[in-house]
Image (tube, rainbow, N blue to C red):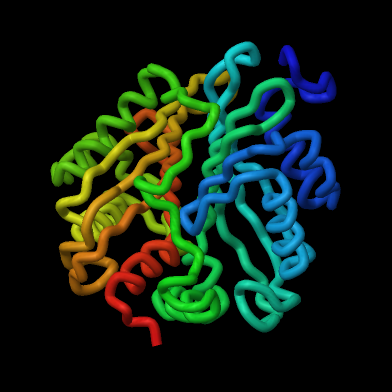
Length: 325
């Protein structure tokens, strides 16, 4: 780990360790050490530039959810200390909605949801990040419909003209990391599988997924088997049938004592021009930033985790339609 603090034994240990130190250890000031002052953090809801804004957002989240935990489920990574490393870090978070904040008046509800964060690190600092939090799962557990929450959020932020604009392919900001991952066979296999699905070849599901595959999807959805894969990806793709599916980054990984894994960050960019999980077509221009992790077994993909942000999708649709009030 050349260039990194010697207390970290490897890159996953660095990623999991600093996450725990910042959030559960309440050492928010350590972000000055671990994050570059000009870091770019892209999430489906916005693009944040600069460490100060990251620190402000971290404090706001902890004020609303003071007991928040972040359990690192996996780190799928590529690169080297010399050239820089990219981690795709899957987290399961728990929190109690104890104080007012972006999610409204305190409800006392106990939440559980997932996050996937892709981070580029070099010389002990993170300088580029893509953060996908399952906002749909959060608001559902607070008894909000994602569409209604998006509508309310637009109103609270000042209306369609003044509200915080979601991340799109066009407003993206170029950062220091320009890598595309690696050419490992497992990343390539999963990439080919997703490209087949997005090209309407859903027969690939029964060929590449274990019949007993366990599935964790955006919106806090847990499912199983080929029907669950088909339901999720068909519902998404059919809402945006003419959109371009772009694989932005892919990693395949073989590690001792672990099954083969893959992590893919992707974009679905185009028009809401079909019937699916987002209702009747509106013609809205929509960009969906997504991330997927899989584990492979003897009979194909045996676990899949795919996240995107339902709130940011609905926000883009509602800004287009004007259906705000």
